[in-house]
Length: 365
Image 1 (cartoon, helix red, strand yellow):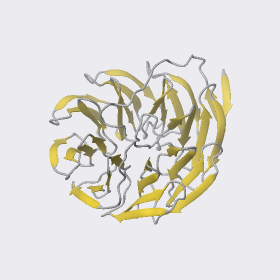
Image 2 (cartoon, rainbow, N blue to C red):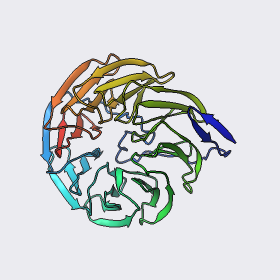
Image 3 (cartoon, helix red, strand yellow):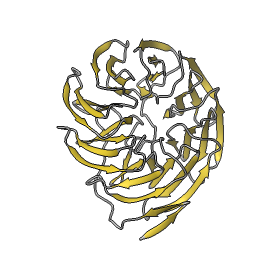
Image 4 (cartoon, rainbow, N blue to C red):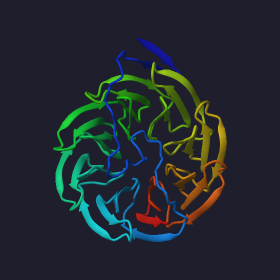
């Protein structure tokens, strides 16, 4: 059965919704706070803009750090993976990969997973940094990796999207798409949602990687898709936001926000928050895409906003890290760093951690 979806054609394969459930690790939170990529972090104590520590790694950081308990994990363009004490920034261990790390790492109970520009995915022992396994993939891993259950997911630029066994590194399946992948997936309702750099949105069967439905879009997709309340939201680099009701694959709306988009969206109480290449953070209603407010910085926003306790946290290419009130869009505080901030930040209890393009990792309390 074929459906017309916005300017694209979406194909719905008539399959019942899988009973598969995706659970957040009891250990590290996914890079967007949950496996649906809402950008929400459940913490009680909010950072107040006070410098705690920094670590200069000596090489660009473009992938989000991940916090697991009191340990921060992050990779840089030199191919180094760091495990740091979140309390003081001291290095617990460091591992050298075969190529640059451009995206985020992922963590489960036992391992740290990382993808490289050289086209390899590693599993490292979380405590020691020693290699548990590594496996070759068919292109550079640009956006990083994601883990849920016993599966690691990695997308390759000009290559395939992979599902890899987290225990031994064996490939479960791979799915090719035009121009490959530069975004991380979302998981909900028995689907794996991911956008390709060639401009197609995919809803995949996690069992075998087959496309159960999908649709072409106006442009490349680097922002992560988002699922909430039965709806999927996905964005294109050239500024469009799409909303689709999942059951029945019913298009709800798609709109041009006002500028090319550089970040992944966050969702809180019926509002989407997205960073633009015009330097503005946009708040748009999730039911129709209308702009509620915008907050202007002095550089493009590629660092995706995250949320806790009514506050949005994100960085800008102007070198500042911002805390903005969720409802009003008013500035609460900002911190000046040593360079452009393009990586997503991460929240832990009382602390926000972010990185700069110069390779410096900051902790702010």
